[in-house]
Image 1 (tube, rainbow, N blue to C red):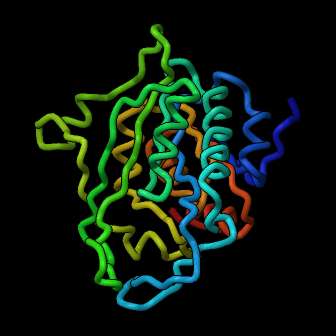
Image 2 (cartoon, rainbow, N blue to C red):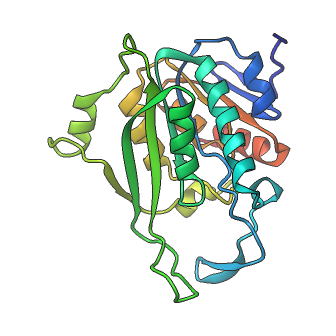
Length: 254
């Protein structure tokens, strides 16, 4: 196991530049309390979509280019298997996705020894319109919450906190929030950036203060920003220097 080299290391907030398929091999086994992952959806192509009332390309980057089904599934199995190795037996993993990858993610989780706890539906209150007018408006994403499929594994769930956030009622598995606010993109943006409100629920639901959270696809660092605000420790892995620098800018201006 090679020593980790941090791109950014400030108290309980660490960033690593590189491919998670390699970096995860060098993280201490059974050391992570919770993982949030927003992996590539593999949906980029030559089409267009609507964003903020403007027509924009659906091409998000080379990391999101369409690939063959078998290749996509093998990729998902590899990184999920590596995440399992670094996750504590009582830890949990959250993975977000759309119809383009979430079915492979669900199968890969079960194949690699996880048990799905919940299927969270994120209902977007202000989704972009479907400009083709040949299908329903895509207004949801799925977030799978899973634990290791072990009899001794007792995952953490802060039920009372979730109930309090939901006005004293048991929280359901459909969460309604708007898309990422412009104020959260003041330092720059990532094409698949998730809202802070969404990550706050995830972090509060499944971790306690000082727990160690890992995001193998750091992106713009929303997971880390939330972890830092809520007094959790954080490790983010990201290939692109541009997004690591954006994460640092967000963290230092937060």
